[in-house]
Length: 193
Image (cartoon, rainbow, N blue to C red; front, side):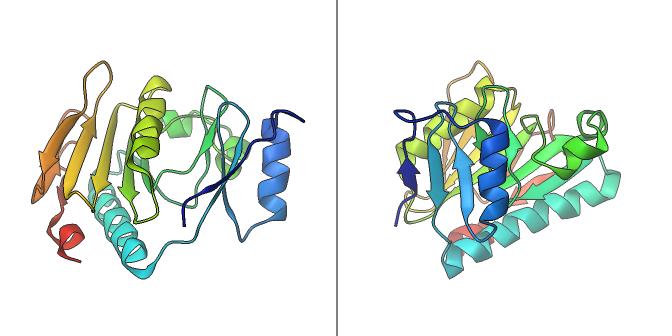
């Protein structure tokens, strides 16, 4: 089952406040809002996708605990991007000074910033082209590094600002010292299932 998109633009363009009210009134739904104002309802993940997401979040969090260079977020966190979209990457990391610059209220709600680093994991229900467009949206809104893990094709796409995506076939590990010093993502367990 792929995400259900409700195009409300003929009737209204959802504001951040309206989206927040809808999301809070429906806590059991995973919702995103496109920059164009379409409401996306994300289906729940299956067991293998949930396991993979947990492994990815764990690895980023374990690395971050060493030097505490920022904050790590799981897929339930919604970020309010500069273009007006409200997105929930599977894993996100925000550099410490950017996170600390937010007010306590901004940290408690949907943070008004784009993460510095995101991981998106393609599940069986995801359309690759939509995830690739989402990765480009993150870059256009200030993301410094993105990794799109495509289980079906056994590829990892690396996204960096002002560069074409780099595609790796079934890498065992991936890292980026410039953005994530000392972090190495072990992908062997991710490809295994």
